[in-house]
Each structure stands twice: as C-alpha cells, then as structure tokens.
Length: 616
Image (cartoon, rainbow, N blue to C red; front, side):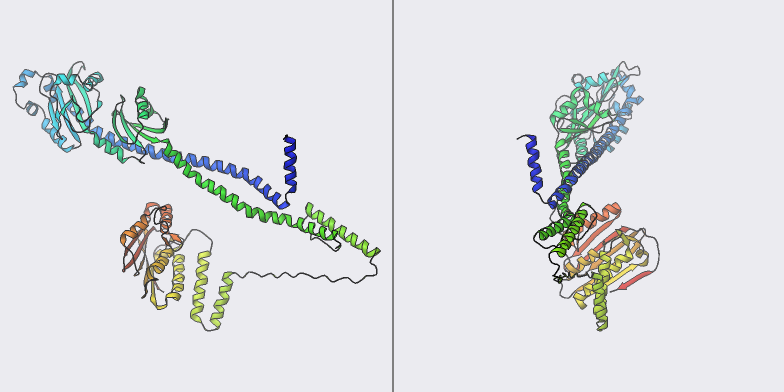
C-alpha cells in the first residue's frame, strides 16, 4: 500500500466521523503532546529529586560512621603519642639492657607506666597495649581481655605488621588481626584493629621499640551497622593500603576488590563527587587523617526501585487527566456541534416540505453565517410560494410553542433558612435552633478559605456539631467546652479538633446505653497550645491506641478513621506544618474512656485574656 493510498484511507475514515468525534480527537491531539511533555518533565524532576535525597542520606551516613571511627582512633593515637614522646619510656628504650635486666619491675620503677594503666582502665574499648623494646628488655603488656601476646621479638619482626611499621618511619600503620590468627598473639579470641608504629631515636635512624595498640573490631563493626540505611546496603572500612578492616551489612565482593585495586578508595575519598558508580552499586567514600576509608555501598537496584515508585504518581495523574478529558471534551464538542445539528435538522425538514424552518443564530462564526443564509433562503422560498401558489390560503396553522419548564435550584442555605422560620412561626423553638445550628455548621464546613483558622472558629464549629449530636442523644450526652480566651485568637489548621470530638461521640458514646460526657479543654502553656478531648465511653486498650498512632498508611490500621479523616492523616498534617514541635497523644482504658491530647505552637494575633468557659 503506497503512502498516497494510506493518506486517502485516513482521509476517508476521517470523513466518515461525526463532527463531535472530530472535535474530541482534536482536543486529545492538542492535549497529548502537552501531557507527554509534562510527564517527561515530572519524571525527570522526580528522578533528580530521588537521587539528590538518597545521595544526601548516604553521604551523611558514611560521614557519621567515619567521624565515630575517627573518634575511637584518636584515643589510640593519643596513647601512642604519649608512649613515643615520654622521656622516661625513651630512656628505658635507649638504656643498657644489662643494667635493667636485674631490676625487678623496671617498667614500674623507671617509667610512669602505672599512670598509663589507669588510663587504659578508663579506656575500656581498648583491648591491648604492647611495647617491644629493641634493646632486648622484656616487652610491656596491658590487656583488657584474655589475649596473650607473643613475647618473642624475633618472631614479631617477621610479621608484615612490623615490617610495614618499620618502612613507615614513625607513622602509624593500621592492621586487622583475625581471631586465632597465629603470630602476633599466642591467644586471641576476637578480631582486632591494631595500630602499630616504630619508635625511633631523635635522628630517626635507629629503632628503639615497636608499639602496638589494639581495639576490638566488633566496636567498629557495630558503628557501621548502626549507620546502615537499608538491609540491602553495606559499609566497608579499608586501610590506605587497601586491607579490609571491618564490614557490615551486605556488600559486593567484586566492588570491594575494585576499591582495593591501585588505591581507588583513597582517590574516591579525596574526590568532591558525592557518589561513584561501580558495577551494580553506588559507592560513597569518606576518609579521615588516621588512615582509614569508610565506604558505603548501596546497590543500584534499590535506587531504581525508589525511582519506579515515584513514577506511579505522574502516570496516575496522566491517566486521570486523559479520563477527565473525555467528559470535558464531550461537553465542548456538544456545545460546538449543537448549531450544526440544528442546521442539519432544519435542512432535513425543509427538504421534506416544511418551509417555515428557521435556525436560531447562536454565533457569528462560519456556522452562524450558514444559519443566517439558510434562514434567508427559507424566507425567500416561503415568500415565493405564498405569492405564486397559495395566495388564496391566508390562514396559517398556528404554531405550538414548546414550553420548557426550568426549575431554579434552591440552595441548601436558603432551604434551611426557610425551615428555620417555619419552625419559629409554628412555635418549635428547639427544632428551629437545631436547624439554625445545622445551617451554621454547614456554612463553616463548606466555606472556602485559608487552611488555618482562629481557634475561635474551630470551637464554634464544635459547638454547633455538639448541638446537632444532642438531637440524637437527648439527655444521654453531656458536653463541656472550656477554652481560655488567650487561646481563642490563636491560629489552628482547620478541622484539627472536630474529628476527635466526632470520634469520641461516634465510637466512644454511641454504643453506650447510658451515654456519657465529652469535655474539650484548651490551655496556653508557655508558647504552646494544649487541647484535650476527653470522653467516658467504651475506650480501648492502650496498646491499640498506640498502634493507631504509629500505624503506617499501608498497614493494618489504614482504615482506622475519625470522622472523615484518618488518624495518620491528621498526625501527618500536623507534623508537616509544625514539625516535631506538634504533639498528638491518645490515652485510653476499656470501659473508662479515652483522652486525646493535642499540642501545637501558639501562633496568634493576640495573647492574654480571661478564661472562657462554655457548656453545651
């Protein structure tokens, strides 16, 4: 089929469509590219937002873990510095071994080592401190666990830890010593992070000793585990040499292997880029001057899932717009095609012999001009027929005018106002007041305006609501409103207290045969407003009340409602507006009642005043 044939087929198909259908298609043809571009923009913006938020969270977690690890390392560095610079200890390391070999407890008598024992007793997180003199003296050893060190310095010299410290020329070297690993310890039941360094003379040519301080690796691992944001992520701590010191969570060994290659982790930690894509993970590296690099590994799959969740909203919005466009386009097409239908119908009747047809001119566009031309043509034809063929027939049939009965809508407020006056005239004063209260309640509920209103308006709404409820409960319901005048001028989100009052009556008192009472109190405590809604209804278990406050919107309590608002919606609305300064607490006992306490910041135009007590 050629392109020309296709164009003819499309043109024929379009020619067969009605005008209303063509108008609807035109509306969709205009809206679709706009909607498509809007969706692309929303998706791109959502994608960037998700990545920015996730990046900030992971960078903060990696930095916090690095800071806490650096704090522990600093304790070890400070103790090593003291051992290195203390002149008493250096004198022992530089003294003649034969002179001190016969001195019992020479570490205690020649050095302030007891002071260091006290410090190590306070630093309970440290495991061992070992100082090996190079002059042949026995090593100094302190242990806070059951570890036993190797006293043979010749064997210690063969270890990579010693050799790396000797090459570092006085700098600290960090090493992981695994549990039960032979060599440095004769007995060791836990993994240890060991900081070691060579103690040199002032010329830095001769080694005087080898100092090693260790800490349980589980302490570092616990820090890393506490900063994991999700179960599918992991934190790996590397030394500058690339050795894995600690890991927590789930981590991809191939990604860690790449970080170890050629000091990649150290280069990434020095980079200003917040994250780095390596294979199937995003890596966040943070370093400190003490020789360790903290790497947070987050799988890309988790990020992609968060992005996909964010796509649901724009897709649902686009679908809703497309669905809502149909009735709107139908209304528009009906309005535009109405004149053409009338013209087509008049032409059909004119063809059947009804020459009195006239089309009402509704516009001055092309359709209006066609209607005007048709009317003129019908008039000319009718006059021509009257003059030449039916001059003798002067009587014409009377035309029947179709009467269209239109019922003017009576608004709800006017109807209630009429009912109010009828009740007043018939002497039903109580009923009239109830109708008036219901009318005012509807006015407050349905009125449009700002989302924040004075507390005075909220209390007024509650008062009318309670008056209506007393119509149902009669003498079974006792209500009291006691709100300080200082609170009345404060601002409050609309419908914050009324749903709890409604919940107290509907769920707390409605099932009670004897009824009960509802008390609403409002006090100003410092710069906070404190409201309490108390009832003596059926109540509930406290754990159920606590679960209602903590319930996630997708959990079992997503249907728990008070009035027309879910408890989680009210709590979320308060938190979004006031942050953590807002408070919502529910206390309840079965068969005793429920007390709701709402705490909000006092934002008002006037402060002070006398207490206003109101009973309903």
